[in-house]
Amino acid sequence: QVHVVESGGGLVQAGGSLRLSCAVSGSAFRTNDMAWYRQAPGKQRELVAGINSEGRTNCADSVKGRFTISRDNAKNTVYLQMDALKPEDTAVYYCYARVRTSPLTASRDYWGQGTQVTVSS
Image 1 (cartoon, helix red, strand yellow):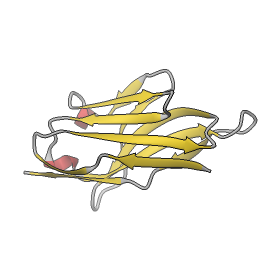
Image 2: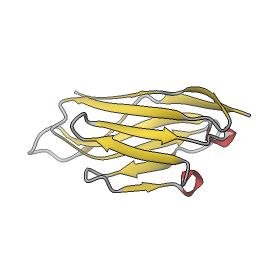
Image 3: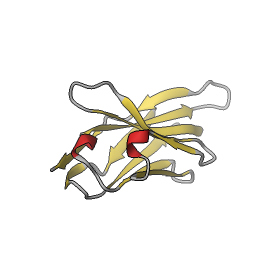
Image 4: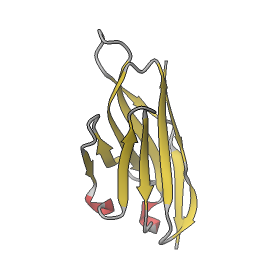
């Protein structure tokens, strides 16, 4: 099985910072795209930032200049550095990874259980 585990969420005041980590473990032959999504109460899940296996990134307009996504391929870990946090950033943050478990099988989508980020004003 492939395991996707997030960590680093918590409560922070507006203007503060948090760093989320997501480790992919188990039968991960190759981890391709990785991303962070978030879902606020009453809202749809949205893409925050994504990164491919070569380190190419993209991010939502709402977090540009404040959030940075990065990855460590050797550790199969993706990070989200969140600075200048706003109350609007409050959400459950989910880690996404597209993973191949075998060189002969297609990649599949895997999701973490989510980590709560709460930003107070």
